[in-house]
Amino acid sequence: MDTARLKSIPVFSDLDDDALSQVAALAAEVSVPAGKELVREGDYSYDVLAIEEGTAEVTRGGEKIAELGAGDVIGEMGVLERSQRNATVVATSSMLLVTLTSWDIRKLKKSAPAVVDHLVSLVEKRKEHA
Image 1 (cartoon, rainbow, N blue to C red):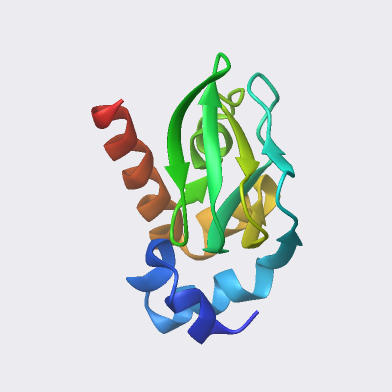
Image 2 (image 1 turned 180 degrees about the vertical axis):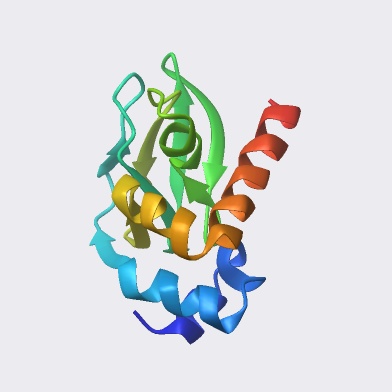
């Protein structure tokens, strides 16, 4: 994956070139159509999804709780805490996603800890606002 494209996504924008290169080597790009369920509440979390393009709706217990768009991240809480998904997320438009698996996150924890630290800080901020 191209590091310049990664840098345009807020979750990766503050990373130095070395960390970006390490993420780029592991990241995959996925296109999904509108209506695609990205994650389901209660499932186990195996990947982190960063939205490069498109929109999605977040529901918990069948009630809409948020809308997501370019720059938002999905799944980091479950992967970092090794817990079940706390919401369902469905694409409301076609989407372009950058994905990192839980294995990728473990590799980055060793080779580029700043990346994982940044994701952890995102999780902590979300918990404060939840």
